[in-house]
Image (cartoon, rainbow over all chains, first blue to last red; front, side):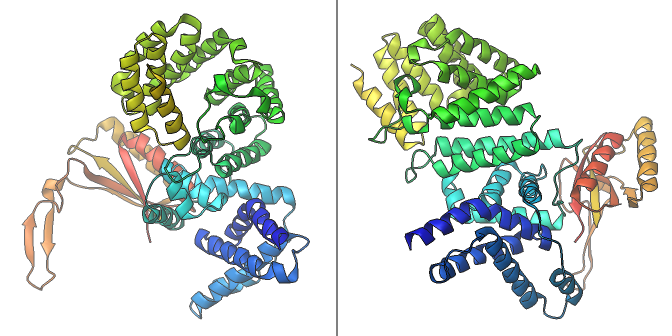
Amino acid sequence: MIDVRDAVTRAHHEEWARVVASLTRRFGDLDVAEEAAAEAFAAAVERWPADGVPPNPGAWLTMTANRKAIDRIRRESKRDDKQREAQILYDDDPPQPLGAIDDERLRLIFICCHPALAMETRVALTLRMVGGLTAAEIARAFLVQETAMGQRITRAKAKIKAARIPYRVPSAEDLPARVSGVLAVLYLVFNEGYLATGPGTDPVRHDLTTEAIRLTRLIRALLPDDGEVAGLLALMLLTEARRTARVSTTGELVTMDEQDRGSWDTALIAEGHQLVRERLAAGVAPGRYQILAAINAVHTSARDARDTDWSQVVALYNQLAHLDPSPIVTLNRAVAVAELDGPAVALATIDRLADKLDGYHAYHATRAVLLRRLGRSGDSRAAYDRAIELAGNTAEIAYLTRRRDQLG
Amino acid sequence: MQYLVSVIDDKSNSGTAEEMLAIDAFNARVQADGHWVFAGGLASPSTATVIDNRDGQALFTDGPFVETKEYMAGFWVFEAPDLDVALKIAAEGSKACNRRVEVRPFL
């Protein structure tokens, strides 16, 4: 019985996007595809305990979803649309080979990440259609009302249908521009999983980080020569490798210098390092994700936090600041500068960012640490207070609160 | 599938001779590629008249129905198989007329 439940959960994880993608191709309608897929999984929950798990769950789900979709279209079209119905019912496409099905999932990602949709809508739609998350789960991840999230997804689907956003991987010339939007979405999904916000959520949402990695792998399989795709995958793997060390048993954030490095996932680190080396060997100027991956490679190469090659980290941040001179990059660079040149130099740099980053919890948390190291306890306490007020992650709030209370 | 591409402008009669030439060349290309349906320029919003005859007593009001800094200065109607094609043509149109444009599908 437990095994059957596991099988349904696993099938949902592995097959949801394939089922939705295959139905979207056949019926050309995201709503029909999604509802039929949901009905097929509901049928699996009902039938598999009695009938046993089918030998090929994906094929069973796709076939069941196809029948459900046809039933729905028959009910809804009645006699108005006989021709369309006939066309759908006699669609005799041969079964798709596995590679082509993967390609269909990619097509689905590219619909969800179309540049004609707002960035936040792209993230929500990707999680819904490709990740199979409910509107409630997505709403919780992004701290909005479920109804608002439901409406956003509904509006996006309506736009895709009415404006006829095509169901295809964009042509070669459009691909680089479109891929960067897809990567941005996947990075947002990953970050939301890694530093989940909201009082009622787990501090780390493994489901979101896993899904982001899985989708990035999918894109990498189709675009193996794209440096930024490789860079983002490496960045995610090297970050994910530290996941279990990052939150203590009492639910408190553990900063990298205090993490038990023995509990880092060596297989993920090895794979991430391999990707970073591969990009270095390519000899092409790296983009943002490749540089971030390289920074993470430096951190994960050190056996002990004290062995970290900070000059290398600062050099990489300099390179990143050249591409992206944003205040957040300057802030992150300052953390490394503090290790190399001392807290006073770093503090002088970030104090200049006050106007731009006043609403960002990490800015105040970083200031708090630098002020503490400079012995300015009162100022440090005020910075911790502000950081705690702005932070949304429960583990981080617990950590910041303890550190503040330790101040003399 | 048809798409309306509105040209967004914020001043009247602002098209330069150079822009007109670019628009003509663009229109010729669109016609040759088979995407052309219709296009037209519009006189300034100050020439508009709003009519309300919902109760059978036609009321004429001088001026546009909404006061905005930006308005629709002209439009194209393109035939395109999907939004990606429409966006590509509209992007070239924006370049030709040197204005922002808005793309909306017909129902």
